[in-house]
View 1: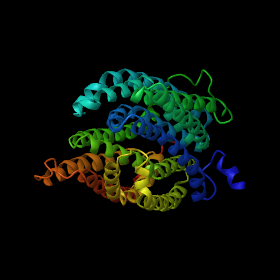
View 2 (view 1 turned 180 degrees about the horizontal axis):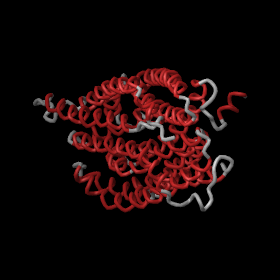
View 3 (view 1 turned 90 degrees about the horizontal axis):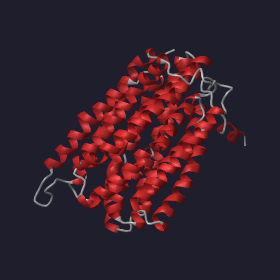
View 4 (view 1 turned 90 degrees about the vertical axis):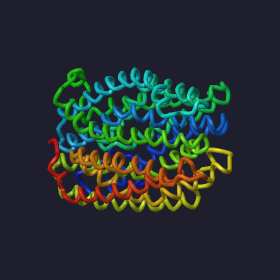
Length: 459
């Protein structure tokens, strides 16, 4: 009972045992991330079972384009989380109030940009990726609905970043559970009852995300004991807006680079045909769940480091970094073993085609060891970001994806071409990803050990 009470409270990470604070913050955020992952997963399950494998491929092929144009939300959300956590740790109410107000203003600007550019650029991007003619119309319609309805996605991602910076990870969990249940209901209604196909799951996602965003905004208005949201603070302030942008921009660029690499590799993936595209979609969905502990601990470490750097407790940050990384590695190891043991049953949720299930599981076995390496990478990168050093993780990500992953994917496929495999061996697309994860982990450890991140706090 006492544990549950602690779990549902706002977490001040500047005092108490580091591992306990990190775990209390991570658990509800992990559950929330699982709920968020259900958005795309439910879309895939519904279209895969009620529309067909080509519809499943369409939803997956749209993913890289969607992610590329949503990097603004990721960047502002990360900048908001870091800035809020440091001002909260420093107990600077006025500064915190200005930061929250400018986060909302930046969200409005980012939403308008994505709605316009995303809608216009969707089909040209899909054509550039050599998306098969059999699914390109579905992909385009799916993206148009999501971009036009991106206001909910924007406000949820950024306002939940503000809540995390304040140490509140439970509110985002509750709101995502509500939105996920609504998304599942609307998916089934739009696809089965109204026969809307791929467009139906996109509309369901947009509506559900708008609900979660409205709930986040309501929660912020209830937190008047920590900051103010009057007219004075809901104005553009260059000092605070630039702090958010400067801290968030590298994370946005990182996400953009990752999305671009996915787009380039997606072009290679598309050359292997619809079945491998569909298998890739299934792997991405399972991969999304496998990565959730890593991303959750990474985000928790960002808030932990931010609050403690704001409170000028550098040694506490280092102590928490070790304990948090061990927690992340242990959790990721258990989850990886479970995927290897029961993954085939999980793959079967997405399709009724046995060959597709087996192909997906083969690709998943290749990636398995990489999830443990990513647990280390995400945790230590989270510490560096929270401390204010968002550039180092950005450069490591660029090295990992642009210098390593993309060239290796094309090189390995080219080297394995034969009469039986004129495009090369398709599994090497995933081998290149595994190798880049492991090398990226080593590089992250080196830069964390150098300790330059300790000098980057904005307060």
